Amino acid sequence: MKGVLQWVKGHYKPLASALLFAALALFLLLGADAPDEIEIAAVYDEQDHTLQVEQTIRYVNRSELELDSVYLYLHANAFATRERAPVLASELLQAYPEGFSEGYASVEKVFVNGETAAWALDGPQQNLLLVALDAPLGKGERVELELSYTLQLPKNRLRFGYSEKDVRLLNAFAIPAYHDGSAWQLHEYSAIGDPFVSTVADYTVTLQTPSSFVAAGPGLQGEGEDGVWRFKARDLREFALVLCKDYCVAQAEGAGLTVRAFAYDQEDAQALASLGAQAVEVFSELFGALSQDELLLCVGDFALGGMEYPGLVLLDRQLLQDDDGMLEFVVAHEAAHQWWYAAVGSDQVNHPWQDEALTEYSTLLYYEAVYGRESMESLYRSMIQPVLEGGALEGVNMDSPLSAFETNTFYDALVYRKGAAMWHDIRVLLGNDGFLDALRKYHRQYAGKLAPPEALLQLLGKEGSQRALEWIAGQR
Ligand SMILES: [Zn+2]
Image (cartoon, rainbow, N blue to C red):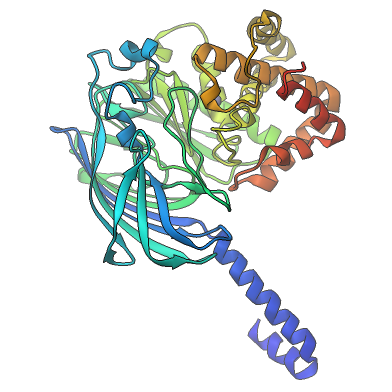
């Protein structure tokens, strides 16, 4: 590169400065585009159900503004009181079978670029950690935040907690809030939906557990000997960990990806891994290959059924006991989220339809690919049609934010099922090839990014986006 520039300089000066300018612009752009880097060293204490965390976050300011502080989420604090915990009153008993149990984060130390910093907890749930910077952080500049905190785990069956069987460290670690270029997007940890919006970061994690535990997390390096587990993974919106003493592990290959399943017996683990591999194969064929090389499916105590994380899916153990076919449906749904959430991010708080409706319809496409068109149509008739005929979806529309929904039944009916009906209609309108072409472009262009709703609509063309807008506005 340098040699070429020198040659050009000697021959043609304006071109040389144009090239230099372009190189500088590219460098600045790459700087602003570089992911945050997050290093975590954590020790799990089985007696007290605590996790001692030392964490370094190298945060890049991607906004146009100078920042004088940085907001981080510390979602553990949302679990501190029964009143504020992210669970509906009607689901409290399911989530806390032995009664409410508190969880929280105690912050012990915050450093900015090596110096002690001022900080405060913020928000009604205190799930925000506001860190004051020592000097304004300009566009594209990086700051190093060091935190020490202890997580107290609640005994529950939610994303963050422990039970007899397992330990769920999901949305557990501090993570930068999303700054949209003009303001911080700060959200409560709501009971309905997945109230998380995050950019990608590169993670290096070391975890110490009692040696009886198996730790499942993305990017495991080595075997986790003597209870020391090392993970390294790129471009994750979140670092998810599940610990369990009784895990049997099995794996299967699908579309160049290794699917590893963690269940309570070997037969279940093998069956799960095969299902996961099948789903990954179907979706890779439909939407294009993922950049990650593994997907973990972890069985756990989880009152909400299934939950997606980058490279990891949590599945309630009840799904393996019931013989009603829901396990396959949930595995396919959560696997599809590796495309619509983990790869292509979106604002899950203000536009939850953007990933959920597409993921739900992708699940129907899985059934069509594996079992044939009639299987998909039968699912459509039993799951989707009744919602369309119900006519009780007034007051909110598909593009309402999470806060507009009062029950999970209502949220599910509108965002998942009616949302899937929207995608079915758009597929008929665009034709199968046009429809899949748009989704492949969406995946290719926005993997690793947060896609605004307009980005998705635009890819549907004039007719497709018009039709989508009618559904979203509740005119269909
Ligand atoms: Zn989902």
